[in-house]
Image 1 (spheres, helix red, strand yellow):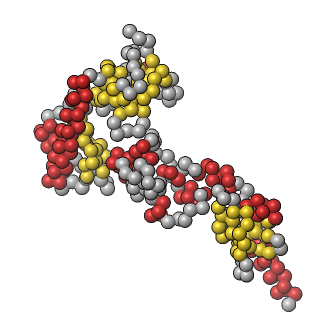
Image 2 (cartoon, rainbow, N blue to C red):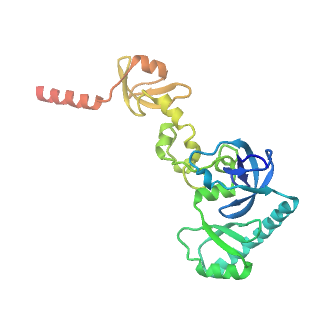
Image 3 (tube, rainbow, N blue to C red):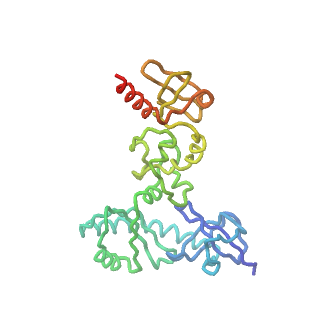
Length: 287
């Protein structure tokens, strides 16, 4: 028996790899049978001789059951075909009960002891009666799991506006917090339709370059800020921090200059409106 080691295993349709223990000799791309929280599943080995993640309790990391045999792989294919049929059965039963839910995926465990139906819905669904109907049809444990719009996009997949496969489907592990401030940091037009992904939420890729843009904009005036440049007061109407250019405008003139020129010759006038008001008040008193 080999020494116990940690390996990473990825399951079909999931970009995230999970940590397992192994006491058998494995290679990358080996198919293995594992006992997960959902039941017996077949996964693919994607990492060997790994260290246990710091946030995991070593005692709770599960052991790989065995290498997947030809019989296991045959069962997996049969389960996938039967699960697709089960999906339509579940949807038909839900429609008959007038439940406002859409079933988007069904999954059997390898031993067919359990079938999981994944669905989306606008709110909570009382599926107790549906569970009874499904249990009578499939004669195994039934789980109904509701997911949100972002999980649905990752599960279904698709092509983004960049022309590539959705990041959440390709490699995304967890959903980070995305805010409209990230779009502002990148000087993007605040058009929610263009900033939203397939899920209808703000695109995850807004986060990827956010820190870089924050660094590039550090010390620069904000859009619409007033600056004094070569003796005139302008408003900063646009900036391109990648090309390091900006546009200055006032009532009589407009300039395209580099950010280096702005930093060298420009003076940020944060209180220009206050200065103008005070000057106006003094003039009124003199009159």
